[in-house]
Length: 75
Image (cartoon, rainbow, N blue to C red; front, top):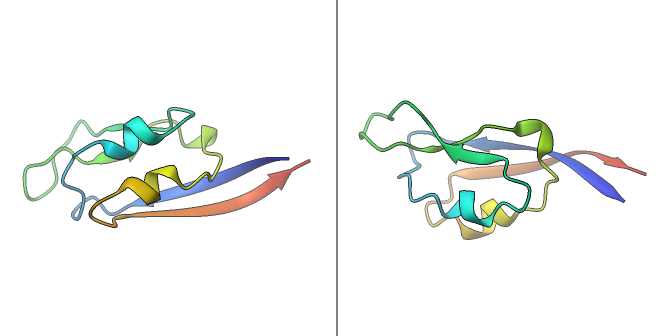
């Protein structure tokens, strides 16, 4: 059963380490083109429709700035 998900990233907490980008198996995440208040380029959902709510990004985030939600399960 495939899942669909949604992620929310707190731009101001993200330091732009991009560990989540490397952990995403379906390439949802990438670096933002605009810096946050601290001057870092945080991660953002570049392809949010591809999210499968696996939680890998949440697990590797050292700053706990990512939330993952399962929006629906597809049969």
